[in-house]
Image 1: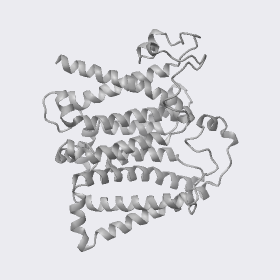
Image 2: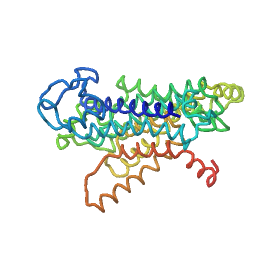
Image 3: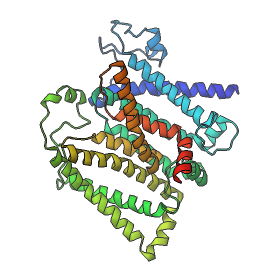
Image 4: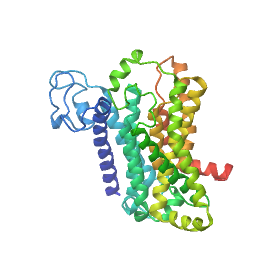
Length: 396
């Protein structure tokens, strides 16, 4: 039992170290600065931070939140991000393997045995999502921007995890406990076809976009990966757009995706292909990859649909493309069904925030990204309870 406690402490310490790196990401990534050089320095006096003053959690407390050289205050955000990440990493381990609140289907009696018996892959992918979405939410709250690199990183983790999961954990366990997205069951083959067609269509759209055949929307606006802080400070100087016209460009961009999905579905339903297609997508690697890609498309599609219809209805840009990428990344990790459910949970969290503002007369607005992230976290942690509710009341 002592070894279990030592391992838990190690995981929390590892989480704190990741949190320390997230602080670098939160400050540098949206400002287009390198994440590796130069070394961290005090923003007040520019003195490089010594290694013994850069110990996660402890250094901020020992220094009492001040630079040891110029005594400039160090934001408590650094300590809070490190603490939050440590708690999240430790909490996920407890949730999955110790208390098994979210069951993984791994039958080993001890938490460490479950972890090293295959659970490590599931844990690492989920922890990657949590850490990246924490950083994205912090950046979004400060600058109203979600760096797309974070979304792409989570998407890549989801694709790799889903693709190799069948070699680490039994495929039956993965499917039964929803550890990774998979295309399975009677709806598996059609969903896989829609996914393949959608991905091909997306590739065509991107080629046409880079070739200049399709025009990007809001192309005069500073790119989301650009100097976000300056963009936020100078919002009053941003050019005016006809939003319905701009969103029409996005509809044109998405047409090849929709057409590709429909064509692929029709082709794979042909009698001479249907059985072969079903056998192909039932292969564990293919099933995992297409499940993750399908989750990405579903997560991106539902946010993009709200963005398009909201903009057409109100002639004002509704939701940001960063939110589209964020939910796409979430879908790549948790799958189509769960990312759609998370999207419909997010507004309730927004309502709770609005009630808090009303009761305590705090009028600070925050972007929607943090609510989407919290909804994804909730779906992951309360997965088993939600699955029971869906099965008992709605039959799926």
